[in-house]
Image 1 (cartoon, chains in turn orange, yellow):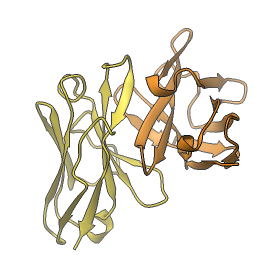
Image 2 (cartoon, one colour; image 1 turned 90 degrees about the horizontal axis):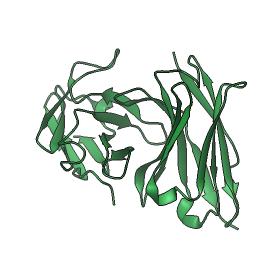
Image 3 (cartoon, rainbow over the protein chains, first blue to last red; image 1 turned 60 degrees about the vertical axis):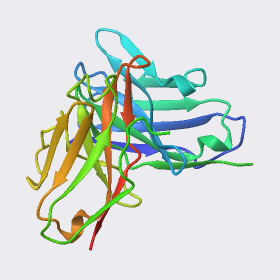
Image 4 (cartoon, rainbow over the protein chains, first blue to last red; image 1 turned 135 degrees about the vertical axis):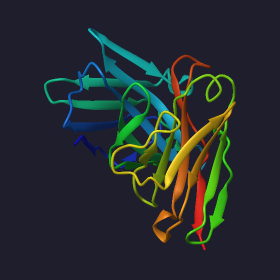
Length: 120
Length: 112
């Protein structure tokens, strides 16, 4: 059974960097059949996929165009965890952030979610 | 704006069947058989109910079924139960802007 446990601050100041981590159990972040995603949800934007990282002999990343200049998703194989960094945040980045695993055809396991509020 | 269009709400009585539609384009639903459906209770993470348009993960009731026609996917819940009251989201793979997963705006299912 795959389990994803998120951690990170719930309050970030405008213009600063949002940082979250996701500890993975029951699978490997360097699995050759999975990808590791960050998704956020807010009342104004609904569910929004932000990006993913995956390993297929080397590491690959895909990011949604709307945040591509501000986002970094990394994998830490020594800790079997995933991280998200979102730079230069504004109040519009206030949302519940989820890490999630995907296979070839769907997003199948989700973390518990972390509410991140951007406010001074 | 969500990339996929869903009705804001649907309702039905216990025992009845309801269908939730999800309309996309030829860049997502119309081109790929990679539609998934999620159930979400307030304050909880989404749960996968249907993948690849019609398949159910282990443990999901056979009262949930999926289908697709053209650019529109549908989720049908038969034999409605009070516990089915939740938000439902569709999701599709798209290559409109490179690789991306896109979601619908969500449908609130009300069990009367």
